Image 1: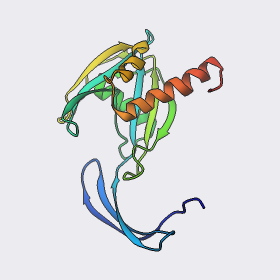
Image 2: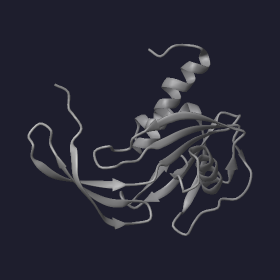
Image 3: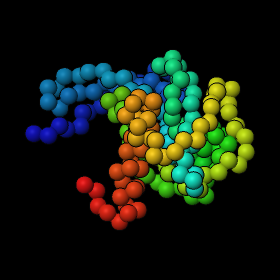
Length: 189
């Protein structure tokens, strides 16, 4: 028998932070009838952008990530703020983090970052015709280096561990496995 949704007995919001809030759900298992607490990170949706220049370069960013206490190599992205659409947030994050703008955006879909403990989605866009159009507009908590790298190098960067952020890897998966075959008129294997 397939799993069924669990009945929510109660819901309590514990604390709110700028990028997430902590919620405790008391739920009842449909299989056992027992109640359990689950802790959920509620977060606004996120957006990621694969910025691609007409010369075939990807605009990457390098920034310090406090969770790992390391500098990581990523693509631009961030929170979808109140009043934003995923597309407008993608354009804003690209401009703020890199100083670049795009001629066009292509929606590559969304993923759920970690549905075991999070309630949000991460939308991915391919930005085409990206050009440097100004300076970065970083907030006080950002320190970002902008890099231009050939698109052909991305699979090796993932394979050898230079790119390890799971949402960035998911974005490139969508690009290579869905966008490229669709552009070539081929079906997915």
